[in-house]
Image 1 (cartoon, helix red, strand yellow):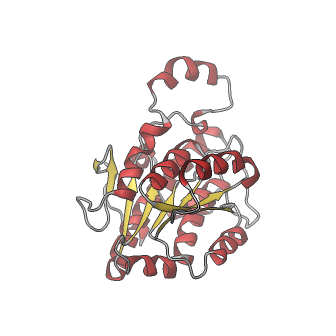
Image 2: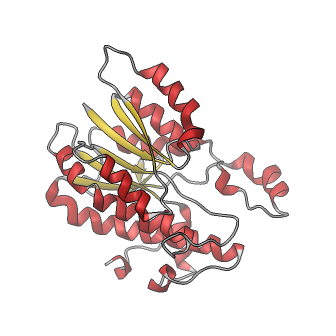
Length: 273
């Protein structure tokens, strides 16, 4: 049996990823911020893909990336589980500046700190997966905003400074994705010896709630910009391919868009070290 974890499993792209993983024979662990709200989707998947005679299973667990205690609880619940795919799909761009219960800016914790922390806590389970026929892969979801770094330089202080404006939060979102990009390169090198692949997907501009700015520009965005965006299914296609492909063009590490290697303009940076 091969097993995949998907964070933000009940979101737009998360749903597409979950369906495709099950269709490709993966048992699924859905990590959801609000499990109660995800129950209808969970039941839909269970009815469509799980039968008493089959080997597939679906499990739903609460995961609040804005709480390190929740991250630890989630990882603890998977003690002893063999994990073949860890797909970091969850991400936020909130309408207001918020601090987490751990005292960090919400954007930096949910998009950057917590995914890396969860990865570290699940390394034992991933190592078990690397010893199986399907191997083990960690997938991070990036964004075209990584290249914000060409204008707004990423500095270590981004982890401690709190953005006060909507524009500041958008820049912070881009910085978290840029930092995640650098971290993925570093992890790919560190985990190569353990047989764990680390890859990243850039879904492009996708029509999800992240695009909503919660200000007077939203009606204009809905009329002129949303029709140009990719659907969640289109946005998820690269992540699905990275999770299910038998072999990848770049064996360890690498970022992809539209199922092809993608190079960011910011290049590599020592900041991730």
